[in-house]
Length: 511
Image 1: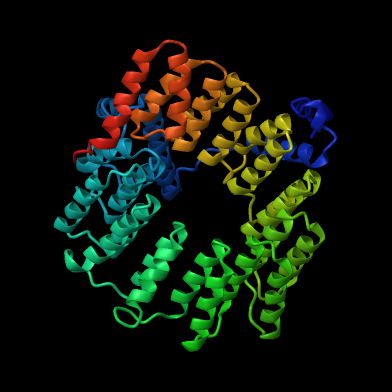
Image 2 (image 1 turned 90 degrees about the horizontal axis):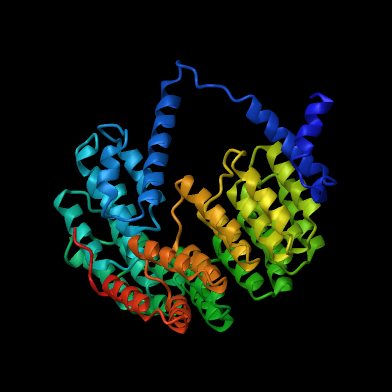
């Protein structure tokens, strides 16, 4: 590269970061890569087909974010230059991107129904829609879709696992268990051991491990005979709650029933000790595995590195990272590298963190969006706002590292905290332009930021947009906005917003 060009690219990096050679090297690499982009050859139909699929998915998601409400979505989609027949995979990808907006997802689903190449939706499309509707607690509509799937011969046990999960996340545990039972009683799908385990896992991961234990105790050896996975799920659940009394009870019962802990069980136990900051016990379990000649998985190394790194026990984290790299039984993966990136970030040693990212690139195992999210989280935490924005800006130029909704949320929160609402709104618009659908937490961050900056009209606008997408604001958020509006004498707006929220809460969607 010529000297003049080299200097041209360096001038794009603010003065504070030009001393970091990894930053400069990365910028130069990406600039060269962008200058060498070529068109897809005509002899690659599969590539072109995938590109077309991605293009149409992006167009639809951009339309959704631009339109902002289900009422006008049909006409906007009809006027767009889209294929007459959409492949099921294209519809599935759009629905996945709309998973934060159940109402918009349902509108698109119905619009696309007669445009599928097979003239009907796949089970996968129904399931991803059910997931997004469950997020906004539209369970009457969910059951309507379940019946529709049955009538079309598409119903499967995966669907009931999704319904149970969304009910459990909504703290409707009794209904979650009833949904599982309804699978056999009403829909004639007989559950097997893996389905029972999936229910236990659903309850445990929804912070309802006590209910999972009740189901286990009630049905054990009557409706199902547990295997080691059943016990491991409970070990993980009690471990997440840091309840070692109950964890030890399950562990003893598991051994009494003739099950020796396997790799997954050890992983759950090590995770429980790390979560409770009992690192000596966690490391002793690691050595116990070694003595038993058990293969230590990348997941276990990742758990130890994450735990030790978060406590700033950097030397120990590095030791396990090197052990993972040197193990003949262990293929190091992106999550393990990400754990090491996080460990350096916890100690504010960003230069070394960028060095790990460079190593990932050389080894062909990343980086990915999660890598950058970890770095951004810590830069924001250390109040390195400018550096965080530089890292964010370069994500789009690296394949596989495009900002996700969690990335945009980090940036919006950062600018809101800095009272830079112009920048927060700029990031928001970029997100919408990229067809990324904001979630409830991101809307909440932006609206709270606008309230704190006394931009009430703008805050109300985004609350309306949130409601248009079928998301109910958290009570705390609406109370905050309501208090400020009433203080400004704008009771009429409060009444309108309260009515819309109540309507969304009480009136179910129609199919």
